[in-house]
Picture 1 (tube, rainbow, N blue to C red):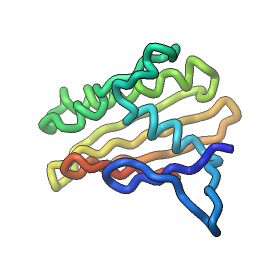
Picture 2 (cartoon, rainbow, N blue to C red; picture 1 turned 60 degrees about the vertical axis):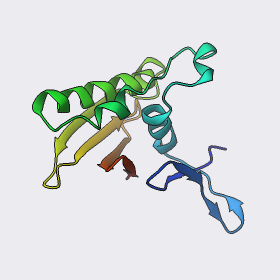
Picture 3 (cartoon, rainbow, N blue to C red; picture 1 turned 60 degrees about the horizontal axis):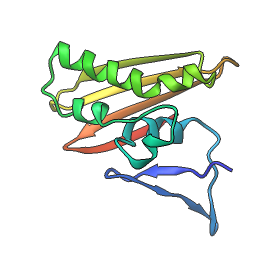
Length: 132
C-alpha cells in the first residue's frame, strides 16, 4: 500500500483516516518525493540520484531565465517516471505571481492516458503541493 503523504507547508506527514493510514492512489507521493527528497544517503544505493537543484531554483529571483531553470530542474527530478514507464509525458510550466512568488504547474500523462495535475506555490521557503 502506498501511504498518502500530505504537505503541511514545511515538509510532509502521513494522513490518518479513521485511525488507519490513508492510502494514495495517485502519483502525488512520487512527485513530492522526487521534487523535494534532495541529497540523501540513499543516493549510494539508488539508480537515480537526487539533489536539491529544484528546491534551490525556487529561491531565485523571478526572471524568464530562472523560471526556465525551475522547469528544467522539475523535469530532471521527474524524468525517472518516463524512464521507468510510469509516465508517458511530463509538462511543466513555471511563472511568477503578483506576490513575487514562483508557482509551477505539472501535468503527468501516464501510458494509460490518465492525467494527473499538480500545482506548487513556493511561499517564503514553504512549499504547498496540490494534486488533482
